[in-house]
Structure formats: C-alpha cells, structure tokens
Length: 216
Image (cartoon, rainbow, N blue to C red; front, side, top):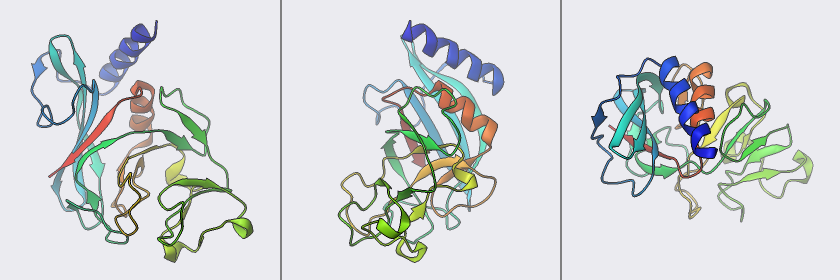
C-alpha cells in the first residue's frame, strides 16, 4: 500500500510540474547517492539562481519526474564547504531527515514538526545543541537566541513549509547549520528557496531516505 501511495504521489507531481516523460536518464549524481530512490537535484545557473530537477529511481533506472523548477540559493552563490554567516549554499549530497512548518503537515511522508514561536534552530556555536531544532521559551533557552549568533526563530513566513537539509551532521561549530528547502522567490542566506505550491507537491512526494544533491 505504501508503494502504491508513493507511486500515486510521484504521478501527481509529474502531472503538476510538466515532466519530460518516462524516458530513463542518467543524472549527474547517479554514482553518488547509493541506493536512494528519490533525489532532488539543485544546480546553480549563476549568482543566486538555480534550477531544481526531481528524480525517482525505478526498476529500469532514473526517471525525471519534473525538471527546470526555478530555485534560488545563497546570495553569494554556492560553496564546497559551508561556514556560518557566509551566505552561500553548500554543495554536496545531503539527507532530508525531516520537514517542518508553521502550517499543518501538508501530507509529506517525512517526519513533520509543526512549529510555534517556541521553536528555534540553534546557531550558537558555543552551544552543545548547535545546528539542531530546539523548543523553549525565549527567556528559558540555554543558547543565544540573538539572530547575530546565527540562531533562527522558526515562526516566520518562509518556513510555512520547509524541509531540513542534513548539512554538517557532525555539528562542527562554524561549519554551518540551518539549511532548508523553504518557500521564497529570491536570494537566501544559504538555503534553497522555491515557490510554495511546488514545495508542497514535492513534500507530498518525499519519503524517508530521499536525498538532495547540490552542485554548480
């Protein structure tokens, strides 16, 4: 039943996003994603602009579910290794561990957290919970909540819906955090931004084990 649901979601996404057809293709990341069956590709096209393509692997190989989705990345483009405050989107292959948003779960197969004003992404490099989601009243948080520290309150419009990118899973201080695929139509501080309707369709398609591949 779960496989049927995933196939139906993929079909719905394809219809909505004008796919290239059912031809099997060999995407640029094919040798770098192991056994993953769902990959979101983000390729820079200059400056903070990028294009997003969505791929599903079946018995015959990779199918392009949707291609050419306009996207934006960091205002300073992309970089091989992220660092806090550099306004660049890290390149590489990353997990998509869970999704969140101020709105209710739109139907994603990923774990979903509905956020409130008490939800934060800890960007304090001196904090033991650096680069993780935390829940606390501002006055009771055990990390610096000042935006200058890199911490973000998650109760903001671009995070009506968002998918976490698994950047810096070791949580090495200074190597960056709070990278998401979220709603937006302009340059970001390092995240990937697309329009709301497309993001919701992709979230409904995503299942655990999906990856995002970022390059230029």
